[in-house]
Image (tube, rainbow, N blue to C red; front, top):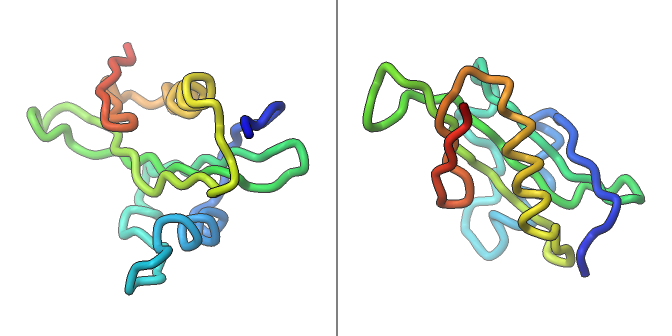
Length: 119
């Protein structure tokens, strides 16, 4: 089922924990959904809510030095989780999440294993 009328909003780290636990920690020894970067300066968390205001997807964006050039800033995507009963319609919503973070000074964003240039 592709979710229609979903909206992407900035959320807190704590808001991501229940979905991270359910999706990213299922069938693993660790049930801890926290990342060391969750509260670093520049880290941003986004959530996708369906029309009933249910959180159905999360992502965490962490500012880091780019591995190929320490003087350049990159964004690392962490903690991406989508409720197991949902499909977010990949092209539209992946772009929405990535585009929302363009306000940073970062020039490179690693998104779903692909590098996209934001200028």
